Image 1 (cartoon, one colour):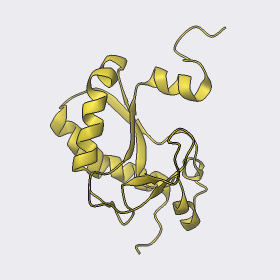
Image 2 (cartoon, helix red, strand yellow):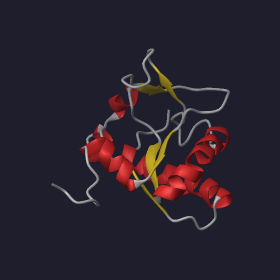
Image 3 (cartoon, one colour):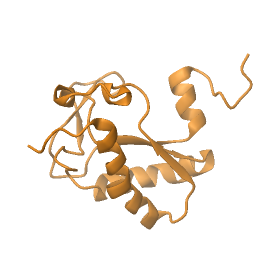
Length: 142
């Protein structure tokens, strides 16, 4: 196994070396931003090799304009499932469910021969903020 690479650096390189080239090929010049936000020890820089046992690995959020996320999101998700490498700098890019409920279940990295169930979450900022904060901060806050 390669030496431990902190999750934020892994995610940065995953975007730069794997996701961005595919995005540029599929949708050249599309406005976007990439980040690793949300829950996870790596977001705060507290990850260790033990973190790799759940919800850790090559993953990120890809933010598009709302109209682009709705129009291109499903196609990009499918493209990445079929064209991302099966592993990236050691860890698998496939995240498997550990149980029956995809809404509450955690995912773990595992190897696969088929398309990867990646963790490149394609969304727009308003949708992401509403899901995580309960409101869109670009709208009026009451």
